[in-house]
Amino acid sequence: MSATGFDSIDHTIQLTHIWINEIDKSLGWENKPRAFRLLRSVLHALRDWLPVNEAADLAAQLPTLVRGIYYDQWRPAAVPVKERSRDSFLARVDRDFRTDPIDDTAAAVTAVFRLLSEKVTAGEISDVRNALPADLRALWPAPAKAA
Image (tube, rainbow, N blue to C red):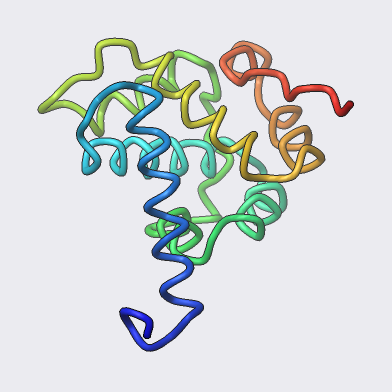
Protein backbone atom coordinates (compact mmCIF):
# COMPACT_ATOMS: atom_id res chain seq x y z
CA MET A 1 0.00 0.00 0.00
CA SER A 2 1.23 3.47 -0.80
CA ALA A 3 1.93 6.08 1.85
CA THR A 4 -0.61 8.58 0.55
CA GLY A 5 -2.98 6.27 -1.27
CA PHE A 6 -2.03 7.89 -4.58
CA ASP A 7 0.72 6.17 -6.51
CA SER A 8 1.52 9.27 -8.57
CA ILE A 9 1.98 11.42 -5.47
CA ASP A 10 4.11 8.76 -3.78
CA HIS A 11 6.21 8.49 -6.94
CA THR A 12 6.92 12.23 -7.18
CA ILE A 13 7.80 12.35 -3.48
CA GLN A 14 10.19 9.45 -4.01
CA LEU A 15 11.80 11.14 -7.04
CA THR A 16 12.21 14.39 -5.11
CA HIS A 17 13.93 12.53 -2.27
CA ILE A 18 16.24 10.88 -4.79
CA TRP A 19 17.20 14.26 -6.27
CA ILE A 20 17.83 15.78 -2.83
CA ASN A 21 19.83 12.75 -1.71
CA GLU A 22 21.99 12.88 -4.84
CA ILE A 23 22.78 16.57 -4.33
CA ASP A 24 23.51 16.00 -0.65
CA LYS A 25 25.80 13.07 -1.40
CA SER A 26 27.65 14.83 -4.24
CA LEU A 27 28.47 17.76 -1.95
CA GLY A 28 29.19 15.62 1.12
CA TRP A 29 26.94 17.80 3.26
CA GLU A 30 24.98 15.14 5.12
CA ASN A 31 22.27 17.77 5.49
CA LYS A 32 19.22 17.00 3.35
CA PRO A 33 17.25 20.13 4.30
CA ARG A 34 20.22 22.22 3.14
CA ALA A 35 20.47 20.20 -0.09
CA PHE A 36 16.74 20.84 -0.65
CA ARG A 37 17.29 24.59 -0.14
CA LEU A 38 20.10 24.47 -2.67
CA LEU A 39 17.95 22.68 -5.23
CA ARG A 40 15.14 25.20 -4.73
CA SER A 41 17.49 28.18 -4.86
CA VAL A 42 19.26 27.08 -8.03
CA LEU A 43 15.98 26.15 -9.73
CA HIS A 44 14.49 29.57 -8.89
CA ALA A 45 17.56 31.42 -10.13
CA LEU A 46 17.73 29.30 -13.29
CA ARG A 47 14.01 29.81 -13.96
CA ASP A 48 14.45 33.57 -13.65
CA TRP A 49 17.52 33.64 -15.93
CA LEU A 50 15.70 31.80 -18.75
CA PRO A 51 13.27 33.21 -21.29
CA VAL A 52 9.69 32.30 -20.29
CA ASN A 53 9.20 29.64 -22.98
CA GLU A 54 12.49 27.93 -22.16
CA ALA A 55 11.68 28.04 -18.44
CA ALA A 56 8.37 26.30 -19.17
CA ASP A 57 10.03 23.71 -21.41
CA LEU A 58 12.46 22.80 -18.62
CA ALA A 59 9.65 22.63 -16.07
CA ALA A 60 7.78 20.12 -18.20
CA GLN A 61 10.57 17.59 -17.61
CA LEU A 62 10.77 17.98 -13.83
CA PRO A 63 9.02 15.59 -11.43
CA THR A 64 5.66 17.02 -10.37
CA LEU A 65 6.74 18.03 -6.86
CA VAL A 66 10.01 19.55 -8.12
CA ARG A 67 8.00 21.40 -10.78
CA GLY A 68 5.85 22.92 -8.04
CA ILE A 69 8.97 24.04 -6.18
CA TYR A 70 10.34 25.48 -9.42
CA TYR A 71 7.21 27.53 -10.11
CA ASP A 72 6.71 28.70 -6.50
CA GLN A 73 6.56 32.52 -6.42
CA TRP A 74 7.36 32.83 -10.15
CA ARG A 75 6.56 36.14 -11.78
CA PRO A 76 6.89 35.52 -15.54
CA ALA A 77 6.42 39.21 -16.38
CA ALA A 78 9.67 39.97 -14.51
CA VAL A 79 11.89 37.48 -16.34
CA PRO A 80 14.41 36.95 -17.62
CA VAL A 81 16.23 39.12 -15.12
CA LYS A 82 18.26 41.95 -16.59
CA GLU A 83 21.59 41.21 -14.87
CA ARG A 84 22.24 37.66 -16.04
CA SER A 85 25.90 37.14 -15.21
CA ARG A 86 27.58 34.24 -13.40
CA ASP A 87 28.34 36.50 -10.44
CA SER A 88 24.76 37.71 -10.11
CA PHE A 89 23.50 34.10 -10.32
CA LEU A 90 25.87 33.00 -7.55
CA ALA A 91 24.93 36.05 -5.47
CA ARG A 92 21.27 35.11 -5.85
CA VAL A 93 21.98 31.62 -4.48
CA ASP A 94 24.18 33.05 -1.72
CA ARG A 95 21.30 35.25 -0.52
CA ASP A 96 19.34 32.09 0.25
CA PHE A 97 22.21 30.89 2.43
CA ARG A 98 22.91 34.07 4.43
CA THR A 99 22.60 32.28 7.77
CA ASP A 100 24.76 29.30 6.78
CA PRO A 101 26.97 30.34 3.85
CA ILE A 102 28.10 27.83 1.27
CA ASP A 103 31.88 27.43 1.17
CA ASP A 104 32.00 27.11 -2.63
CA THR A 105 28.79 28.36 -4.23
CA ALA A 106 30.02 27.72 -7.77
CA ALA A 107 30.69 24.05 -6.95
CA ALA A 108 27.27 23.74 -5.28
CA VAL A 109 25.51 25.23 -8.31
CA THR A 110 27.50 22.94 -10.59
CA ALA A 111 26.30 19.95 -8.53
CA VAL A 112 22.68 20.93 -9.21
CA PHE A 113 23.42 21.55 -12.89
CA ARG A 114 25.05 18.11 -13.10
CA LEU A 115 21.97 16.51 -11.52
CA LEU A 116 19.71 18.27 -14.03
CA SER A 117 21.92 16.97 -16.85
CA GLU A 118 21.42 13.44 -15.53
CA LYS A 119 17.65 13.74 -15.07
CA VAL A 120 16.49 15.91 -18.00
CA THR A 121 16.84 15.04 -21.68
CA ALA A 122 20.08 16.08 -23.39
CA GLY A 123 18.18 18.18 -25.93
CA GLU A 124 16.45 20.22 -23.25
CA ILE A 125 19.68 20.67 -21.30
CA SER A 126 21.35 21.89 -24.48
CA ASP A 127 18.55 24.42 -25.01
CA VAL A 128 18.75 25.62 -21.39
CA ARG A 129 22.55 25.90 -21.44
CA ASN A 130 22.46 27.81 -24.73
CA ALA A 131 19.94 30.28 -23.27
CA LEU A 132 22.38 31.22 -20.50
CA PRO A 133 25.23 33.71 -20.72
CA ALA A 134 28.59 32.07 -21.50
CA ASP A 135 30.11 32.82 -18.08
CA LEU A 136 27.21 31.07 -16.33
CA ARG A 137 27.07 28.27 -18.89
CA ALA A 138 30.70 27.53 -17.99
CA LEU A 139 29.48 26.29 -14.56
CA TRP A 140 27.27 23.69 -16.28
CA PRO A 141 29.24 20.58 -17.19
CA ALA A 142 28.89 19.78 -20.86
CA PRO A 143 26.64 16.76 -21.37
CA ALA A 144 28.42 13.50 -22.12
CA LYS A 145 28.44 12.54 -25.78
CA ALA A 146 26.09 9.71 -26.66
CA ALA A 147 27.93 6.48 -27.42
